[in-house]
Amino acid sequence: MHDHVTNNSGPENWLPILLFLLLMSLYSTGVYNERKAGKKWSNFRTGCFLSGIVIGIIAVAPPLSQYGHHDLRGHMIQHLLIGMLAPLGLVLGAPLTLLLRRLPAEKGRRISSILGSRPFHTISHPVTALLLNIGGMYILYLTPLYATMQENIWLHHIVHIHFFAAGYLFIWSVAGPDPSPDRPSLRLRLLVLFVSMATHAFLGKFMYAYGFPRNTSHRVVEIQEAAKIMYYGGDFAEVLLAVAFFSVWYRSRERKIPAVKIAE
Image (cartoon, rainbow, N blue to C red; front, side, top):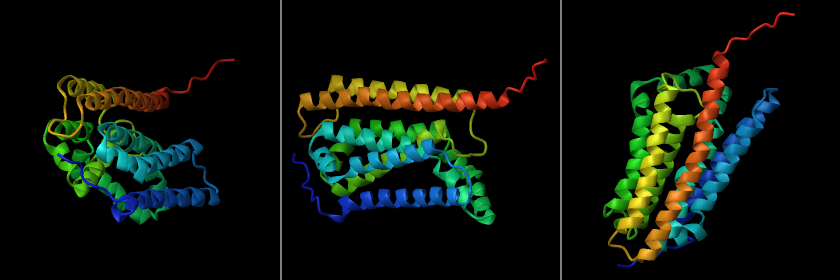
């Protein structure tokens, strides 16, 4: 079996970078207009979003993309960046909140009605997002899909789009600061986060022990090193997500505590 040949100058390699730059431009314009109108916008949110953009560009840039096409370790680094760390930064940037603040009231209500719809509630539920995110990893690495992907560059890009979207959706459903009507309880979201951490770690150990993905040109040592990257890199990303989640929990509890007037 031979890995597919890639062309670094092809449009399919540069389009993702242009899309990330477009997102950065739109977000930066929104922040500028907010401040120009005399409204405050968090520097922390802005920094998170821009860091997510930078990580995303690094993940899809030709050097790492080329490495990931031929080496499972490069692929795993790319997967961690584009499926976990870049979405985390983008979600913490609260882009939907910024969008709603900049849109006219009528358009804002339309978006709010979509967020409150049953289909969106179903797809954005933490359990659904978990199945799309972690379930997609199990399907990719434990079935022939990975070997097929290595022979088809367009399928390769489709898989990366899926993991970026699923990663964003999962992080948004668990610890996103953006508004969402009827969002599940914090306890359920915490449970889903723990399940995600456990199943992600198990997949890394399983790949290391049994040599998955199979029927590829990757050597056993390469697969084991990639599995370690998945295991430890996933732990790092999920610790960051846990910190984001507990900050949401802390703020929610802080809002519920009534102010106490101290008698003089």
